[in-house]
Image 1: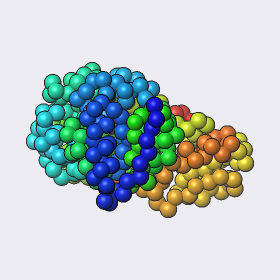
Image 2: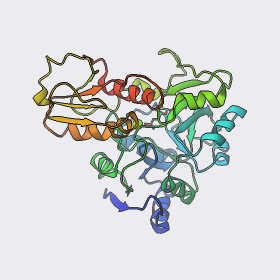
Image 3: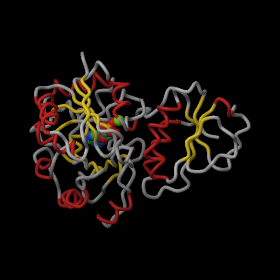
Length: 327
Ligand code: AMP
Ligand code: MG
């Protein structure tokens, strides 16, 4: 398959390109597009065959459900049964990096929701994504546009690397704004709201709006987000978590990369120092993809000092890339 790649202006998307991409989605094809969080790999969420193509292109386990992207609240209402709290959050935070898991209506194919009774919906804060959803006339199922298990793509080059030859189109709008995926909450029971995956929207903002604490599902819970079972976001070389005080005597710093907000004491040959934690979150996946190509044997990543704001999501992504590797 030939994968077309078209540049598109994020502030003023060309309607002809949008309409071409919308037609691909409408007719059962796959188009990668930017959202504010990461690039998504989109297909018609209501067409099980199109959705199967997403799983195939990514090599994604079929029990890992997809997020349905909508252009507004009423489109979400056509897919899931909203409750008052969910509606309030959608009105307050959409478009934005908050995904709501709610009881699914029958119109959502089981394939899209990984066989579950619930479905995940989100309205992305990106003009290209919103125009594309409107142009296709259907909700767009879109996981991150990377090969399953790899770091999510935050620019179109990374999408091309993983998806060339496997999908119809890549809309190239440069680098995304946030850099890690949306926060996923299960709000199907409005009295007990679960944080399934921390991400681009901070827990504090959601808890303030709900005036309640978000619970984390325990590891055995059937309410756990299926996707969190799998190893994720990992570059092709090991990732090792460290902090400012870690002793790095055992690491050959000439063959290791480093990422963090603090300068390491050691003189790494390759390092990426971020000016803030939000810059760190923004650059984490791109950093993984850059450092894995430099002939290094591992990447040290600094553990965020606290879990406020974006840091809870950043810690989650770091943990899932590193597994138990820590010094
Ligand atoms: P990705 O599209 O790769 O960003 O992953 C989407 C995330 O949303 C995964 O962690 C899924 O497990 C989660 N998700 C999607 N639908 C549901 C659902 N119905 N119930 C629980 N988690 C979901
Ligand atoms: Mg993903």
